[in-house]
Image 1 (cartoon, rainbow, N blue to C red):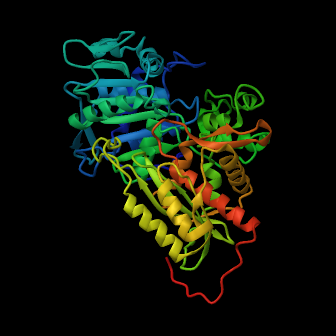
Image 2 (cartoon, one colour):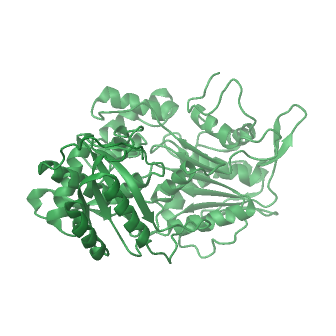
Image 3 (cartoon, rainbow, N blue to C red):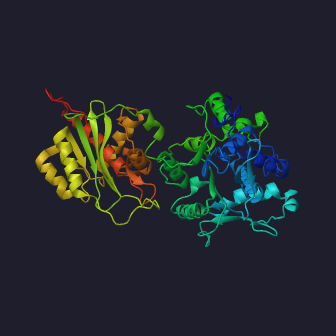
Length: 530
């Protein structure tokens, strides 16, 4: 077996694919659309060829594509958009519909009778990047005459028969109901609710499903917690969505980007034959020059050039560090010494109850009640209330099952219930207002210190709720400037952060209990696995 540079395809035994036809058509007619080699005949790299082999892979009978949707996640300058231009060109005039196998067992395709390719972005600048690559790749091509292509600056048509390529944006008035054959979505890491990206994605997906069209996203790595369309696609695949191909260009870890040799090796892994030192177009040493100090932060540099999912300054959570502290075998047992953290709501997005165990500082989710999503549209349902009796029962269960040395609960919407528990259980469950800078500020400072020093542990979280809520959060400064305090705030309005707030409160509650000398281990207790 000889794997290609992306690790997708066994080059000794490649899968059935229409890629050969697409590549032959592209290399006959297309030109390099931009950069130092602009205007030269297009010659695809091994990495691009391998991606196309997998993207155009067909079923054993050659009658359907294996992948209905795809997302290519690559570093800046990797040449994702030219692949999109090639895909649009092949769908416009090539044999892009799988049509079985020939006498030799090779897959064959037939042209689409009415191709309608949409190149989508949240703005004209966004779509211009990909459509501009398409235009420049075809501008002097003999395919314009050979296939009757009317190439325009704003859209392209086939003459004498149906067929077109057009850009669409979030502000387009006619994006719903179009009988599309292919959708290419540009830089979906920038698509959000506020810029119309989510609505555009929903409309395009609806059209594609209706027509059986394929959708390909071409994007840089997303910022975690921004709820971008790219991040949503990734989470959907992790949750089990099938027939979606995600290819994320990666390489060896780069622990120190300021170590020239280590950083250069990391860039070589990611850019491969696209680097100038291997005959490509990306000068890796120029990328080194873009490291901070300057206009690019370390997190931005890692995101743009190492294709890493990183936390930016102001983010409240580092997903890489979180994975390092995962404790796969952690389980709570009856009688464990714990502290509790609770962040509640009434009709809001979520309520959460978390525990932190002494002495190993392992964080456990006891329960999270979250506003459900519509199974069809994915939108949060409007009419929903937190099941208060269920929440109260879970809190009581925790207080009676474990040795709770302290519990901190945000009183918003839950003052009466918290006071009732406090009257019965004392310090095991008491008010801890998150709006108070003098309370939440030190709690977040303690969390950050322990998180940075890797002294916390995190129990299994199959639904990824804590990580999701934490990446939705940003650090909002609070209290005296000299104190360096912060509180969790939402990056995107409407995205839940309650599990993160509850976990912070639980860690702080245990820290305060330890400081007060209230965590001496209980003796002669019977243990049951929870």
